Image (tube, rainbow, N blue to C red):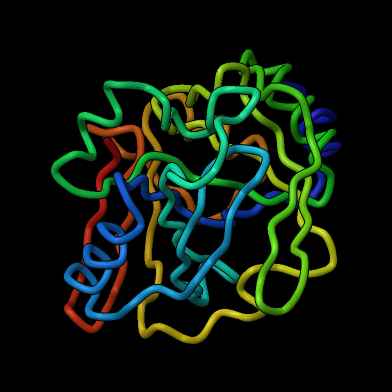
Length: 226
């Protein structure tokens, strides 16, 4: 990737970590048992047939960060395309049958089209940029997101999904949780890719595509990707 392409990507920051769950009830129980605090209600994604819960994990190093606990919405019609984060893949569903797992991370950008072009120039096709939305108690939340073809994760989730928020960010309405994101590591060459995109605060994960360390009421918690 050229320096010009990286510069054109605009400001790129870690936005949130994605934890896949078989059900949201399982995600809620896991969150309380793991961190010692309950997640907040999220909403439904009509575009993808999924729904979520959210947990604020902002810190001085990672501003406006949160964890998204996501599951297939059993009450939603099947989407026209495969669901994001490999949720339709039998292998991932088998992995999360024993409990929720960290599977991906999302990077927010001020220009998702330019950031997607930068990723593409480095050999990772982020897919088309689409508009998405979900209803919240405070109104409609809107964003633009690059959706990988087939809903698949590049490098098993080490390459980020790219998102550009509208005027409102999910953390604007999230209560403090007592959980803070301390470090995030991505595996292999992806760490270089993240550096070229200008994402600050990332380290190298030697044995997993994605590793996150958080401080919580229950102590220091390490999440390792599926």
